[in-house]
Image 1 (spheres, helix red, strand yellow):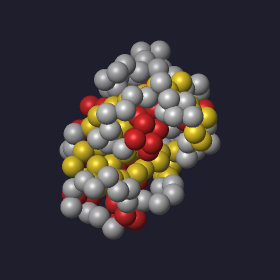
Image 2 (cartoon, one colour; image 1 turned 30 degrees about the vertical axis):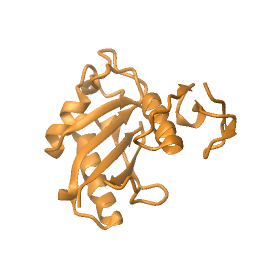
Image 3 (spheres, one colour; image 1 turned 120 degrees about the horizontal axis):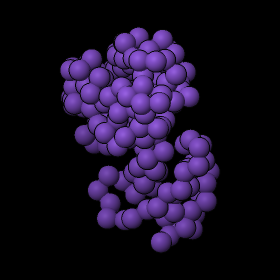
Image 4 (cartoon, one colour; image 1 turned 90 degrees about the horizontal axis):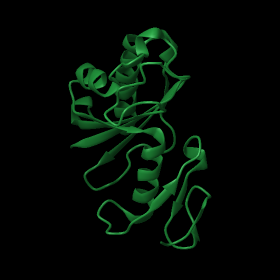
Amino acid sequence: MQVVAGVDLGGTAINYTLVNRDERFLIDGLCEHPALSKQGPDVCLRQIADGLKIATEKAGVLATDVVAVGLDTPGPASAAGQLSARGSTNFAHLQWAGFDIRDGLAQALGKPVTYLNDANAAALWGHYAIFGANSRETSVSIVIGTTRYARTFSEFRHTPWGSSSMKW
C-alpha cells in the first residue's frame, strides 16, 4: 500500500496524518508527538521520524509504505522550506537560523518531502476537504495567525471546521 504522510511541525508538537491513493485518511483524530524544536534541528528531525513511525503503526501501515511526505511549519521561511536567517519564535535554537528544513527532513527520512508554510497548508486542506483532490473549483483563503482562523470561500455554507464561506 502506498501512502503519503502529512507532518505539521509546530513549536511544541508535531501532528501527523496519512492518506492513501483512494484519498482516505488513515488516522482518526490527532496523532501528536512532542517536537522538542527548542533543542535544535537534529533532535527535532529525530522526533519527526520517531513520531512518523508511531503514526504508521497507529494507521496499521508500514513505514516503508510512506512514499512521500508533506511538511508544514510556521514561518518565516522560504517557499522551499529554508527557515529565516534571523530564526523565529517557534524555532529559536541558533542552529535553526537559515536551516533548510525540507531538505533536512528528506535526508533524515530518505523520502521526498514537499514543503508549505502552515497557513498555505491550512488553505490547501480546506480546499481539499470541501472540493476533493480532482476538483476544478477555485478557492481563496484568508489565514490570520494559524489554522484555527482559516477561512475558505466556496459557496455560502458552513465549512466542516466552523468558518463561513462564499462562492467566488
